[in-house]
Amino acid sequence: MKLKLHWQILIAFFVAILFGLLLTEYVKYVTWLGDLFLRALKMVIIPLVFSSIVSGVTNIGGGKNLGRLGIKTIIYYIGTSTLAILTGLFFVNILKPGVGADLGFTKEVEGLAAASESFGTTLLNIIPVNIFQSFTEMNMLQIIFFAILFGFFISQTETKYQTALIDFFNSVFEVIMKLTMFIIKFTPLGIFGIVSGIVAEQAGNPSALMDIVGRLSIYMAAVISALIIHSAVTLPLIVKIIGRVNPIKHLKAMTTPLLTAFSTASSNATLPLTMEAVEKNSGVSNKITSFTLPLGATINMDGTALYECVAAIFIAQAYGIELTIVQQIIVVITALLASIGAAGIPMAGLVMMSIVLTAVGLPLEGVGLILAVDRLLDMFRTTVNVWSDSCGAVVIAKTEGETLNVE
Image 1 (cartoon, one colour):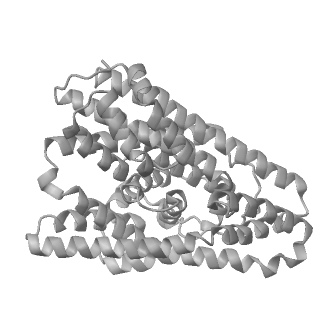
Image 2 (tube, rainbow, N blue to C red; image 1 turned 90 degrees about the vertical axis):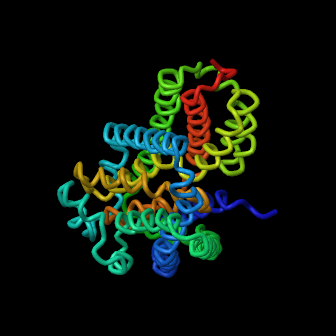
Image 3 (cartoon, helix red, strand yellow; image 1 turned 180 degrees about the vertical axis):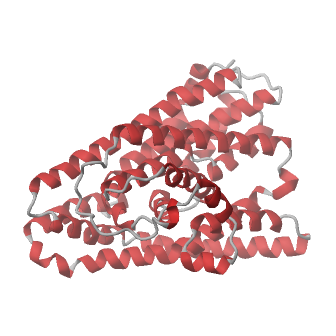
């Protein structure tokens, strides 16, 4: 029986630790696996982000579908995602899971000088002077900004051009997805190369390895605590205050899709169940659910955006780098914008994490450490994603004057 990918990654992680400890002198023969994997990942980041965001924005439908309902939906999704990221930011700065964990990452990190500009300069620099230069320099904020604009204005062109461009970018996205899925299959080997190299560097200091394990548990606590606060406090308050709906009744109505989301770790797989529960149990009309929920599965990823923010700052802390307020704001903006195109991406956590790390100039090697616990955290963050989508549908339905079963 073939093991699922997350089990393969977990096994690779522990085998790499043993290999790095017991066969330290041979580690130099396998570290190239990690280098090759990271190079392949970097190769697809730009085309994947650009095609996924252009495709996602054009599929929303541009100005025609962004009427009153569309504007309400997008305000809700951007608002809740931002609140989720800020919650994560609070917990990772309070618990500081990476601080004091000497992971041997003492090399100079490239790109942080560029990321330490003032906030005003950062905002100005979001607009690219030369988009091809942005591509080659992997300037993620500029690429995401251009992709959103490009996708929006595709929807403003004549129908014949619009159809051709939408089909083209959907096709490009599908091709890049196939390539990404191919690279993802080699994740266990990549993790083996990365982690064995890290462990070998620390082989003479067993206490440092125990510190890594301890810090990962604090990191998990930071992510899960932030997710619980967002899903159990922030979202119910929005439902109660803005939607004027009983959040407990709505939670009971959503039991089946939430349990499914937790067990499958897939919001797309849960979407049919979410739509049925929101319509039949909570009483939201099909007009609302058919627009807000599929859109939410595409661009509303509260849990994922929160996780990316915490993970990026954990990795920065592990490298002994104190991110400034501006750099942390860049993490927030990148996590928010990157989440627009993350839904269709397999193992979105890995790809989005690469985008966020690239935006603030942090090396991708740190991804190898956090992927070991990614599956468990994925279950939690997917549940939060689905819960937020359903809360959005209820709130928007109430603002449209609907009478619901969960009032």
